[in-house]
Length: 127
Image (cartoon, rainbow, N blue to C red; front, side, top):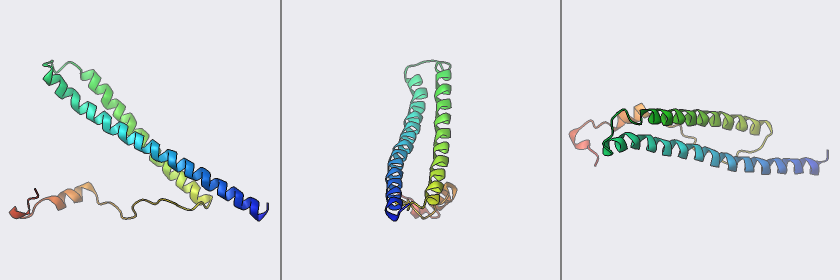
């Protein structure tokens, strides 16, 4: 294979990788939106039941079904993340340069954030 043919294959791989990244971003955002909107729906259902003056028994199976569907969405998000990492491994194997890296600074855990946000002094109240 000549240099030009190798270069053409490399350029084609870069183009395909870019297309995959574009679709992957949309897919991951859609999963996040589904989780968010499903959570909002589940939060609304008990309140709606109260406002409609219905028994606590009414709709429990419906809520249970929606909670289960959120579990599936969460599992799908985990699988998508795993697939994302596998694609990144393949990108490295094919020597396709990384074009977007995201944040390189590790995020602190939620528990350390919460303990840091607890006011130590009475005048440390945010508001």
